Image (cartoon, rainbow, N blue to C red; front, side, top):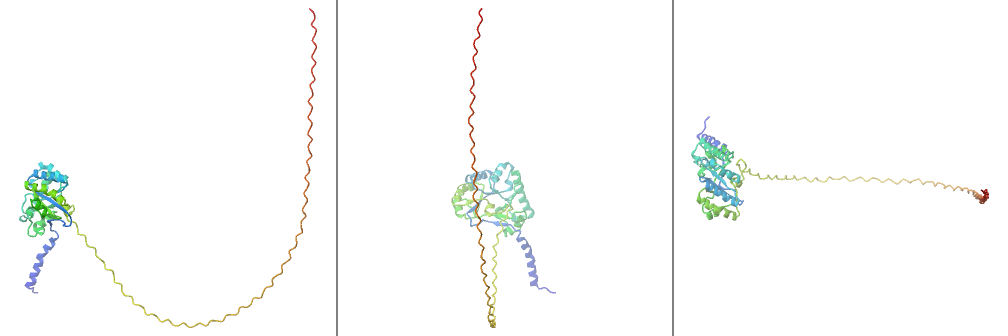
Length: 328
């Protein structure tokens, strides 16, 4: 069987496209900004070559009660600065990976990329004294390759668990210009140097006065605990109502004419013979019973009241005569 050159070229193109299609779903998401529908922005601070400037920025954040995201270089994270790095975490700020040595990822192979990312994580854990899982990263110089998150570096980062790569859309150290360039969802880039700090001193209150809420990058993008964006909500499927089938109208059935039924003649009812009314029987007159005369009650004979018995009169006792006393 012969295969034409055209068919062979088509098969070869399909074979080359398969790896790209297989890895398209495994590439990292790249963000320059968040939603334009909400008045929320995120300030990010890169590199941290000067730990004292970072401390001043943290003081500024405490003053205005705002949160930021810090992308330090791993080699600049020292255990002697443990208090500052713990303050970053305890104050509600966020830390992202910015590699260990700030090398261009597009120039590195897979092993070198893994080394840059893991080295940064180890240094941060050592400085904090506990593990802080890094879930977002910012590529040095904002470069990944021609295909961004779908480039070789982007796919390697995705394998390491970094599904969200953070870029920016505002980077101006003039506070007035930075305010004009800022829109809903903007991600602003600054560094730990004197000019950037002086800009933030004016820019942070100006952003708040303009009605913006200053949040971390993960809050701005609504990333989950793994650094993944929220799953899109599927649109509800409208189920069409079934069209009712037309019901054929039945033809009226001819009703046969009813045959008239002959009405029977009424049968003469026999006349009832009147029953003779019996004559009333004479009621015998009752003989009146003689009423007995009342018996005279015997009159009680009065009892004679006995006469009082005369009390016998006591006879007086005779007083004896005195006896004559003999003469002496």
